[in-house]
Amino acid sequence: MKDARIADVSRAHSLDAVLTLVELTWQSRRIENRIRFGRQAGQQILDRHRRVVSFTSGSVFCFVRWAANDYGTILSRADIVRAVSAGEAYQTLPFVRPGGQSLLRTEGWPRVERVLQTIDAVETLGIDPTDVAPDYWRHVHNRLSVNETPRAYTYMRHQAWLQRREIGS
Image (cartoon, rainbow, N blue to C red; front, side, top):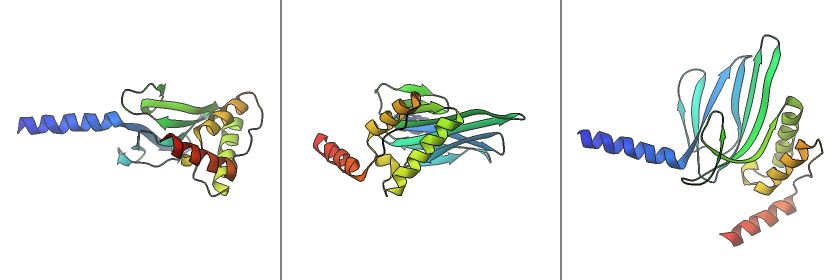
């Protein structure tokens, strides 16, 4: 019996090794950590205000964090992250275990709002943001970091990415 429990625990730990876990929190007018886009592999509800969602390696997701106190907003942040596989190098992020490959990282409400508008523009094309070329998210990060407007993602660019990905696999 004890050996079966050890096997279950080790199997759970090996599953965690291939999943990226993101802790989400929502407290009205105080904290809002949420996923803007991404294909979740699963979720675990911890309590009324918290849950943990998981992503398989290679998945791309957008993690948005916002916090406020009695005087207003104290944190606005958006990260577009690619979940990594076991043994792959990664950057650490708060609330993300173990971490991920950062494609875009920005803070401050004006920049976060521009990222959200860029995601909306991609969705307007009928393209799921999880399928967008990772290079595009890096481009958006670089342009926003110097207060420039990123180039729009186009359907032709997306088709080129899909063909390049198909050739590479």
